[in-house]
Length: 151
Image (tube, rainbow, N blue to C red; front, side, top):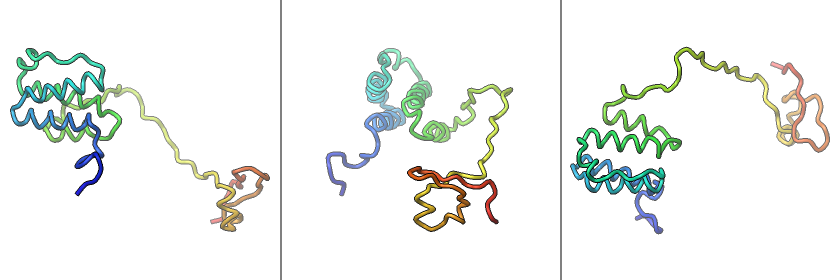
């Protein structure tokens, strides 16, 4: 049994719970209840105007679902791969577009071959020679290492 004021899915935000409930209501043909949750998320989290009941009622189920997915896309933007999961669930992966030009080369990243070694780590473990330390300044956090390390 869960304890505390947030039982069940307390790790989900209220916004996420509202969006999941709206999604379930759309799936159960309860569009009016879904609109209440979508409008709550739009006005509180997004600062957007609510969708009018007449506009919502004039939408098809697919259009209502697309509106929900659009709102979920931006309200959960930096919280994980929710968009990909939603699009996969509704067989819409082909609708995901990359918003970048195809003429731009990818960035070049080279992995550094050496990393700074914390002085306290080497001194505490008596690893000065293994770390390749050539000089440690008194009171500094990092030691200088030689360019080539022993194999």
